[in-house]
Length: 430
Image (cartoon, rainbow, N blue to C red):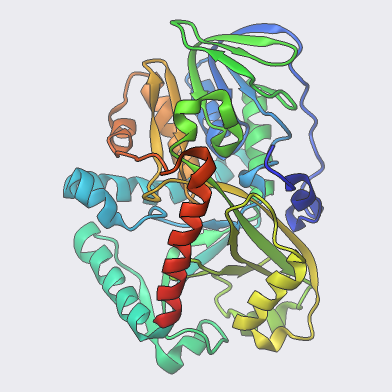
C-alpha cells in the first residue's frame, strides 16, 4: 500500500459525486477462465469488454474497489498523444511507427465516445483541450508543436492564440500562448470507470473487488493466487500499474510511483465559470512540472498539479493546492476549496508507455505517466486484439525500449527528485 493513500481518497470530489456504488464480491473460490485480468481500472475494464465481446470467459480481479486508483482519481483530461514528446518514439522506432502510435492515440479518444454511446455512460463529457505556454520560449515551442503535428502526422484543425488574445481563452495573465484542440476534452473519470464496470458485467465479465493478486504462476496455464481463491487461465493481463507492487518484480523496476494532487473549488456559478475558461475546455500547461485544470459540470474549478516522489501527500494539501490555483486565477481569492485529494501514477524513465509480455500468454500494460485517461482504453483493446491473434498494433508499442530507474528501490527516488528539480529550475528560468 502506498503511504497515506486512504487519506487522499476520502476528500475526493469524484467520490462525492459518483454514481451509487455497485458492490462486487470478493473471490472466495478457485475459477477457470480464458483470460484473467489483474486491475479493475480503465485498461483492465476496456480489455475485459472487448475480450468478452469476442466470446472469451473473463475474470477481473481488483485489489480495492472499482475506480479506487488512478482511473477514478485523475485529472479527467482525455488527450491525444503520449506523456512524452513524439520525438522519443521517432528516435527509437522511426517515422512510420511514430505515426502509427500517434494515430492510435487519436483513436483512443474516439474510443471513449464509442464506449459512451454503446453503453449509455453519462460521465459529463465536455469537448475541447487547451495547451498553455508560460513565457516566450515555451510559446515558440507550442507553435512549433502545432505545426509539426500537422506536417508530420496530418493532425490539423488546432487553433493558436498569442499575447493579449490568450485572454479570450483563459482569463489569466500567466500564459503567453495557447493552442486549442477541439478533439480533446474532459470527463468525470470515476463515473466513466464505473460505467465501464457496469458494461463489462452486463456482458458477462466476472468482476471481483477487494481481491488482491498475491502471486502468479508463470506457466502454460497461468494461475493467479489471492487470499481466498485462485484463477487458472489461458491468458493473463497485468493492468495494476503501481499497485502490482511485488507481484511482478521485473516490471516494478521500470516504473516509479509519483503522487499528483487536485483541488475542487466551491461552485462558481455558470457565468463566473464561463469568464475563466469561455470554451470550458480542459487546460494543461507545458511546464515539466505542470498545472492542469478544468471546469466541472457543476461549475467548480478543478485544479491539479504539484507532484510528490515520497508517496506522501504535501503538508496541508488544501492550502498548497489553493495557492497554485490562485497563481493562475488570483480572482478566485474569495472562493474556498471544497475538496482536495490525490493519487499515484506510474511513470517511466522516458515517459513513454510500457506495454509488453512477460511470457507469450502473459501481457502487461503500465507506464502511462499521467497521460492515460484515453490511452488506457486503447491499450486494453490492443491486448484483446493480440489475444485474438492480431498483435501487430500491440507490438508497435511493445517495441519501445525502457530503462530501469537508476539506484534500485532505495536510491531511485532521490535521483528522480534531483532530476525534477533541474527541470523545474529550467521552467523558472524560461
